[in-house]
Length: 254
Image (cartoon, rainbow, N blue to C red; front, side):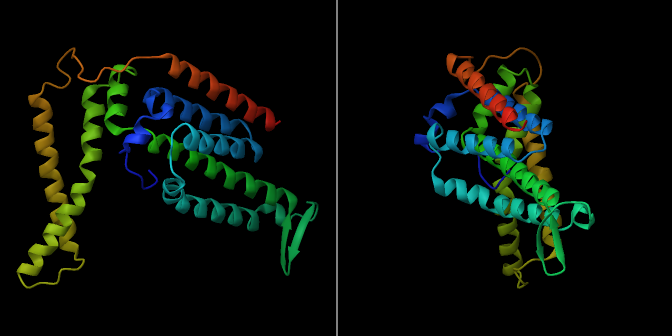
């Protein structure tokens, strides 16, 4: 999501936020983002985004550089979305709408600016919550938690984990194919035929992966777990705190 791998440094892996059940964090993120649909004002998404970033920095030990690297493209996108919705809103052409500012021939209404700002902050909130979840959640622990606590099928959870961890292999396969073209005296840059080669190799990797999972009897019956994940007081505390934050955000939106 956001260009960040689900691989954590040791200091971040020991943070309080990383110790919370991934299922709990996923539920909190979904409830927060679902709660934003109940309001159209800009204060609630701004409050949620701020709470997520503060929690990520203080409780997740996420360095500022990681935040900037993950969120900078989406901050720019949020700014662009807000500006475009402000400039092209229907309220700008309504003579009865209160005028905020006029820039030459461009008239910006108060309602148009409010809607654009609210939408920009909504995108910012979605990006911030997603970034904190991604940067404080280990991919393997997420799959374990989905299987053990959310009762997701092991075939789906571990299959998705294996597919995610195979993504870097696409770059390695592409580099290998380019080197093979150079050995044959062909150009090593981009060529449509490389896409076919990468797809063929991806299918082969997927086939091997499926055979390996079948050999380990995924989905055949009850299983034991090498990394058991249990509910704890930390999960309850974060859940209650997240509910309080959402309630405060919705109160601000009245």
